[in-house]
Length: 441
Image (cartoon, rainbow, N blue to C red; front, side):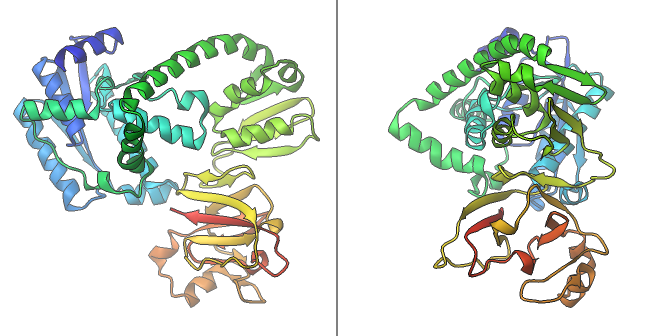
């Protein structure tokens, strides 16, 4: 393991022996092995630990363990405790995204303070495979299935060559202790389903499939590099920049046999997903004025050009858009979007996390936002309208609970007070032919 570790660092030019490295240590087996390797090879390190306060006593025990481990190795340690749930709510993020933002912001602050070369995380080969399948399922294109980059700016992953089994074997042979994260066993998360269900099945179907997948990931990564080099010249002829806005020449784009691929490479980095890009391409020769939204950008299909510009954050703070082609959103929470034909024999779900609507009454894009004083809707089952503030009083929803509430609207009409009640104007009726189903996870 040590020799492989050294060779991987050298071959990928991650850092030198003279550099000081921030090592992200959670207390799990992967990060404990990473720190042990750095210590045994006499690298200069500063340990960074995040306590996200998500697992109560278990999170605090992890913090104590990492403190003890850093002291044993005589490394300086910086610990920061976060109220991750509060941060997620205040910034309109999922817990996973909030933890990611907090973690990497904290690591970068330490790196700059201590003038360190890089930040080392303990991602390994199994993480790479799991990420490959997550991105494959979500449809992120060639970039997504190229796996986790060995180096991404100041972030390096020197354990990416090692499998989980190899890491476990090294830990046992060297009597290394670590903390078990109980959330790793939960099948609530897609990553854990891939780890505990999909991978064993693939190994059963074809032994050593793990190695085959890793070879393919490497092939996809090399292909992506080549594709970027080829597309760079073509993109320069098609696109122009003005301040924060880009303009894509439709005529030049459609003259290329690879127009759709070029469009994907340009606007995917602005947060537009593959289904949206397919829809944009389908409307490339249609009437102008069609609008599409990602988290931070608005795309306007004009007569001769496609215009991509930033959404005004001050006017759209904590607003998220759902395009007609989307089937999943990850911010500010995880939610699936499904459109289907309605069968009168079907049952309407009564789960508060599932909402069903007459799809033909819905206009896209849908907007997810916080509720505001003055908002009103027609509660399901009622004929008249009611202010949301009055509805919350009637339902005995506390001030704290009100602060957490989001709504979804269509053409400035509230469709759903998420997790509470739908609007009667969008309900399923005897005349309904198509439905829209939104489900929180």
